[in-house]
Image 1 (cartoon, one colour):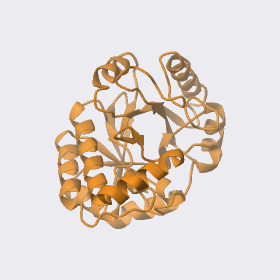
Image 2 (cartoon, one colour):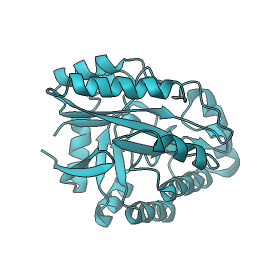
Image 3 (cartoon, helix red, strand yellow):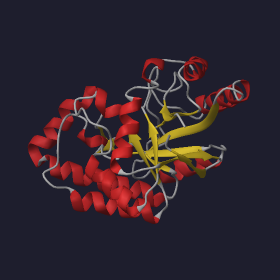
Image 4 (cartoon, one colour):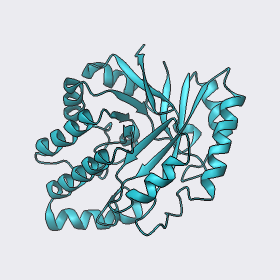
Length: 268
């Protein structure tokens, strides 16, 4: 079962079209892909320039559904969205999500104290936070936000759970914060994304870390996989490495979604 459940198109910050992704997925032997463009809505209702907004989302949904029908005999296409959890945006996000029949919704944390922690333009601000307060403080704060996102009940999948390590930072400890977040994920019956994105970033490792993923496996938390593709060239980035990684940890199944319902598939 070759899948990619994290793909960004020109509708958000990707550089490839839905059609180009579909054609490439077929050429490279994917059985199922999910488009998950960004929805970044701030508490005041404004959006990031790269994000879907109330106007673009209609066209996005329409195009993904059209592609799903056009290519259904060759690849299964799921309609998804990656939603930023930002404290205070809950009512707006809930209202938007109710308007569309998504197959899956990824909940991610990219913002800490109004700083986009994975933006190269704001890297210096992240490094300043670390110098002033230490990385453990930022790591703890980030994972608390992950837990708050999980508790909203809006999401099916937790995206790149330890993305905060992107610039190469490592917590001195952090186990208790990871454990709390994982217990919430288990309690709420969410799925954890395993992503190869970190392998092409300064951290040079898969998200989440082996320690997190081993504990998730022990807790029986299901996983899905994605490359966080922003172009067709990244659609199968380090895919075999991802599969070997989850097998080594002990996972024998991955989870897909249809109309927000999880479907378990055997890792071949």
